[in-house]
Length: 255
Image (cartoon, rainbow, N blue to C red; front, side):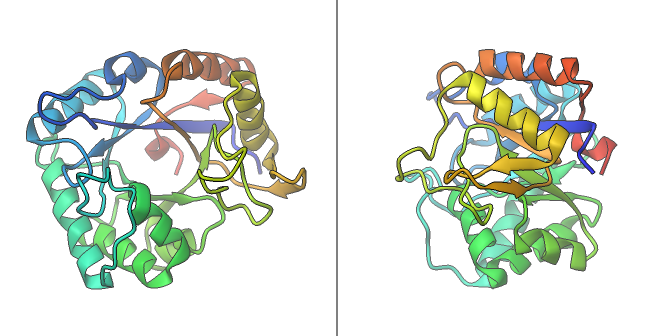
């Protein structure tokens, strides 16, 4: 059944040293969950603490956003890593972020960039990441691409999972994301983004890039926080969800 509650997640804490990236403070009032960089693709101990504090003050669910060790490439370059390496990278980063929280607990884990894409396409990596999450805290929610085998693996291991959709990304007919280097991969019209998001949440369906209608489950919508207009889009999308009778709350409140 289509959800009547939805989580808005956003990648935050991606500044590094003296370099400020994104609109963390401005976005926090409109989201319900924060994926916080853990130092491998962005972020550092100072920014991790600051971002965790912002999220705690706003009542936003806190999640780790672990990556491959690729600071220079912002975690977007695929690397040849073994499942054991992937597992230990994720454990390390979850533990680091958890230490900065008041409760020493996190709500969820959402891998970043290339590691996320590898988890969607590579079942061995997907299982390694899911095992890492379970090993640190079996109550953590694993966030993964809607319809992917990754979520099946997470559930098989006894984890709660969140089916993620992207507000501004086009879909292939099989439900996978259209690669960013393909025309039309990123939806730039705010009204089109809002319409697509409402359709996924309230009707449980999406329109693929070829016009085909596909069923989809949306537990959480990813809002990109480092693009121009992100704050205004988040505000409008939240307003439209509320008007449609959909409550925006942290994923832990309904999963």
